[in-house]
Length: 255
Image 1 (cartoon, rainbow, N blue to C red):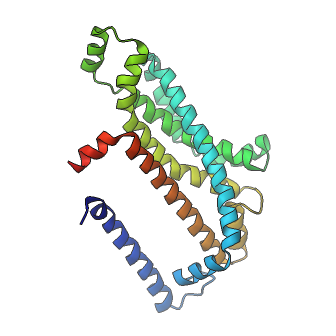
Image 2 (image 1 turned 135 degrees about the vertical axis):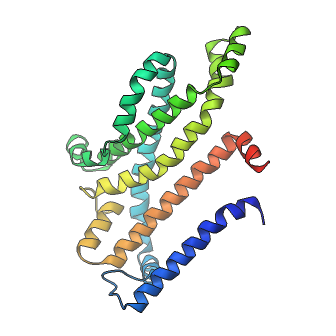
Image 3 (image 1 turned 135 degrees about the horizontal axis):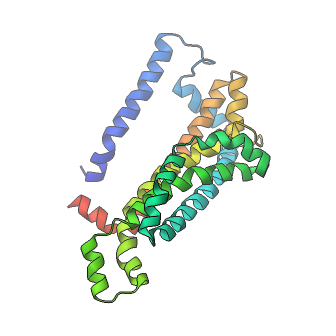
């Protein structure tokens, strides 16, 4: 059995067991499907409404991806600028950490007022939700370079650009990708939840809210399943990019 298979096998076993338990509880206690539909009912509804759900999923994923790119990109740029002055970095880091604990999605109603009910307001919320975690992790990574390595480069009269490309950036990549992976989940949550406050009918958040309010729970669960699938695909795509960008970490873990 390969190391990769051993890594994911426990999670797969737990997932299958949870689905089986869910199915068994609904059957054993005769729970009405409008309260809690069985997994096979959700899958059947997903097949039936596949075109509508995929359209809504892609619409919401576009918001999540755009906000993710903006938030992570701006977070990395801000961290690069702040890292040039360690004193300034120490000053702003506590405020960034405090800001990251604020429930930014609660600003969704105001974002709709400022940016409209379409995708702009959702992208703004996702941008804010992903900016602070990326900024914090990237800044810590850029400042994590070993002093002796930095002193060695200085001794060889390395330029600031050489110090950045040869030392600071490689040492910060694990920190950055940790934030990038975490932000995939934040991006999907931010996009879907902000749509609860208003948005086009073709969005996942509005679809979930409208079907749940009509006790069409199998439709709502189908949309939730699509959101989960998109979030997982997003996460593993970023994890794959991480493996390609930091091959030395994969070699170290397999050794």
